[in-house]
Amino acid sequence: MKPHLLLVEDEPGIARGLVFNLEEEGFKVTHVETGEEALDLVWDEHFDLVILDVMLPGISGLEVCQKIRRHDSRLPVIMLTARSEEQDRIDGLATGADDYLTKPFSLDEFMLRVKGMLRRSEWYRPGSGLGRSYRFGSNEVNLKEQKAMTARGELPLTELEVRMLRTFFRHEGETLSRAELLAAVWGMAPDTETRTLDNFIVRMRKYFEADPSKPAHFLTLRGRGYRFSRRGSQ
Image (cartoon, rainbow, N blue to C red; front, side, top):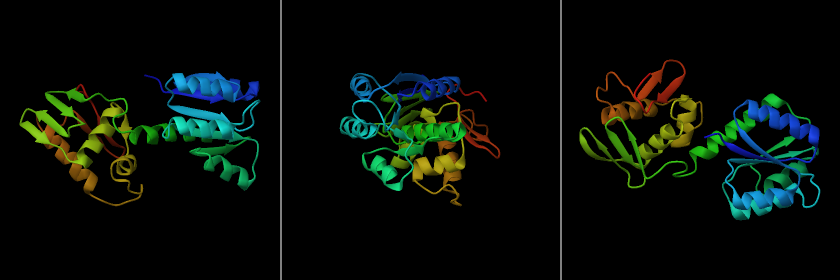
């Protein structure tokens, strides 16, 4: 499913440009012009990210952000503003915003911020988007109970193994870099030098691949990272 974004922006020119470019990138976008409209939607619909202008008619973006945080502590919020003073940025972050962009901003930077925030927020939402069990090949993984049924029998899973599997399952078919996996599973800095990740990939193949020497699900893309394939095709 396409990530669903809520854009709260009362300047028509800016709104049209952002909606067009976000939809071109494959996002579903709902646009409203006031904080009141935004709050009505947030209570009733699921959104993956809110892009929120500070200066709005009626209640301000800061107040909207505060109310959103009372409703959902994890819904990502990017605030947009024409103000550039440090205190304004501090105020925005203090209300619960996750990121802050000052107008005018680069469209490329805006897109990178949106995509990066969606990726990180998805990783850290336990169980988000995944059912109790996940099947691939001859395997069935129960993330909640931390166990797996495989061709070799039932296996208990550690917390880190569950975290890695959850990350791969949510991003099926996507290439995940070493840096992204280290950050998502272990919380390590992107430049960390470690063989831990490689050892975990070997372990995943030993658990779940019919032939670990010829993996069909946990694939290595040399120089790029790793990719999970549910169907077992490269």
